[in-house]
Image (cartoon, rainbow, N blue to C red):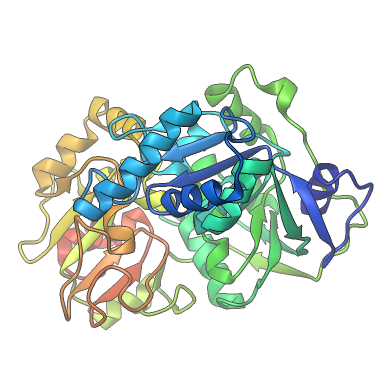
Length: 420
């Protein structure tokens, strides 16, 4: 699938792994952390206008609402550039959110596209059957000027999932199981192609969670075949876009570097222990370890969608956050925040004793609104648990799905929802 998309966008009949190509870009993105440097480099190139102001998104997402003067200056550079260039898809605080949820939900990313963004989790959009990958700020500058990018074609590994998922098992557990098996370098500069009966049954929310974390295995991109679930989602978010879809499916004789099968029938919810997403244990093991926690974070581009908040609210409804724990809930976008408000989810969290914040990346990258002190532990629905990721280098982050995080908030230790 990836090779077909890249061949089309480089005007080649075929491409092969390792080949260097110049690919046309359908859409690109920068945020308040990465755009300022890209804009600085764009000025150096010497062009006056971006290649297409309707195919660039600039999103205030990481340190907004502005956490300090530095963050305010970064956001200002991006805002002024958007005005100057007439960028159609500029998203201000209160009208946007985290780009990896926002842009697909706004119908801007479509099957068959080449989509690049100056953020490593741009790979999230690959669930929509497109080529989506993260790039650096200087690369974004070139893309904004030229509308194309220099790429090395990745080899593809095929991952096949079968069996029936057990209760409380989500897309987060599938990708944690995958990374736990292949390691954080197991897909280095490869395309991860996800297939099989389990993938076919997953809603888009779980699919996005899976492709979101392929970069944690070192992958260039993650991608899933177009099917009815994809189509139904796109008909909701981009109902008039069918003429712009390009569906690419793998050939019967497609060549893969490897094919890995996963039997999901026995899969439990998983927890990634510090300090790698690959350091996974089952929730049964985690419960036995009796790991007390100080903070719970439910949100991020990995698990901040409305479906994730509904599951967390289901677990925590009518209960209280443990007195020794602080719980932070951050919907991924303003639209998700509005939906959660309308459905009464925010009230459920507030009644339980959680803090509900405006849409932002916030604690995920140790930005603010949830930074950890020395020795503190957090269970988080985000995607990374590296040393110092959410604050002090001597703090610890455990990764889980929203149900596990919510149950842990109530019991004050890493817990299974069934314990409630």
